[in-house]
Image (cartoon, rainbow, N blue to C red; front, side):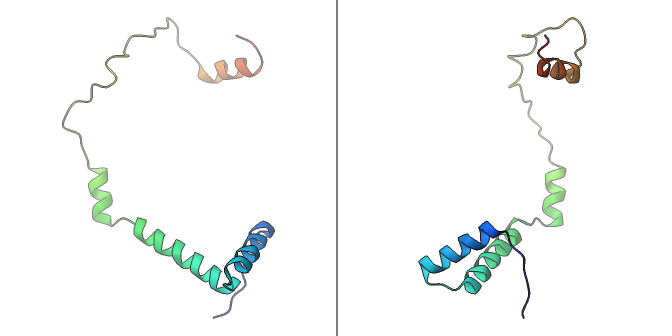
Length: 93
């Protein structure tokens, strides 16, 4: 099958260099790279049952890793993070 694929100029140059260095045609390199990426994508795909299991995962043990920092920082009034960020950008405190 023949097909036209548009690639960035810098990718084209890198492909030419790799082809010259390795002695492998650009056609073969492209097919190898595309096949390898497609194979990797297939490995990463999860089945419906795997996704369902991940979504239904529930930790039964208590995670107390944040207990040590609770209450360290207190603030009397509510904070608007957008206003704080804008003030920082504008040089205001």
